[in-house]
Image 1 (cartoon, rainbow, N blue to C red):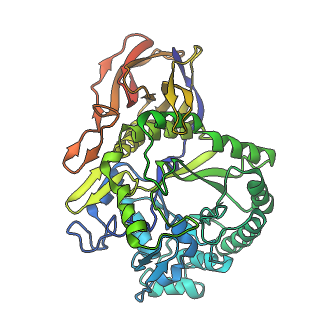
Image 2: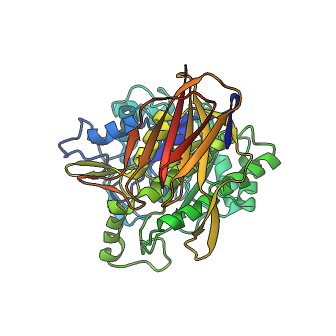
Length: 502
């Protein structure tokens, strides 16, 4: 029996937890949201159907332009009338540079979200990063603010969120650094960027590693507002080998590992109240891009570019993705005191929530999870506990061993403005309906409840062009006369149960 104390608020999640990410990889930007020749494009070249879909899930923030792409990206070549195409050494394709800083800001305004710019800390310099802040945020002072005005943007873009670098700790990243190099570069970059605009909030690429973070935090802890984490559980860079539903459930035992480690480091250094965690790139599935980040590079485009189309096979994004995504969102909410931003990677195409094709869009299973959480769940996290041992099941990990996982993942929240208690309840079982038993310990005012569910006929259900197997179903309000209630949860389902006061 899960017990909810509606009088005890244990935290308030930031709306930035439901953020997203876009990179210049495959069809995310070009032939994705930005397609100037498409009949559904607006005057600025943005697909109106994609923008509307983003508005529906109230995208709060988008991180751009990368990702690995940013570590050889020079922003100055992608503003103004004269755009210089360049060869993107990260993904080994030519980028036309027609989508740059100003287009990104326009896109964010069309969606109604905050822009979050990730800077080039690979081949770039502290000066180049601070020049970017000048271009975006200064009113009239200096060369770059004047350049922005000359490009037709008299008012500053007012970009609040900035990240120094991407995954510069990794050997796959262009311009990778060791821990000492990284601490020094971040220090100088942060110094210059905040000299331009002291109001910006800065993050820096990190990993749940003691040496890396100690060097970073000891050098720069007083100058950072965020520390950035990334994770893909089902990595598939060389082989497009999808974890099954059962294997994906095994990954749910490893949702808060990095958060706990980084929280501990911040606490040990006395920085847990000053620096927040931005989980600013995450997804169950890693991207498929063979022969690029390997030591031995693929030579023929058929071997390293064409295989990227496998990222856009809609039949691969099933209820496994939906259930895992919901479990991670529950984890983020439970850690809302220190995790204040997260960015699902990406939002369009590749492994994203939204798939674009010539005739429209497909809303994949993960899109409906964001719809459910953003529009039906609350922002206040309530105290919830289960004095009994949780129901568990054995699942096979992709590595071959067996693991035991909890069948249910449950989170209690309140929508403050609507005075509704909303409980996120995930049933991970592939085949078994499970009853969720709840009791409200200090509340006799609840009069009605309803269940809103994301699900499909089976674990392999998916959405595609002219196929909608996974949907969000909004239940009808029902009377609730007792403080205790038992609610059946469908197999492999993501649910929000809303309780309304009389």
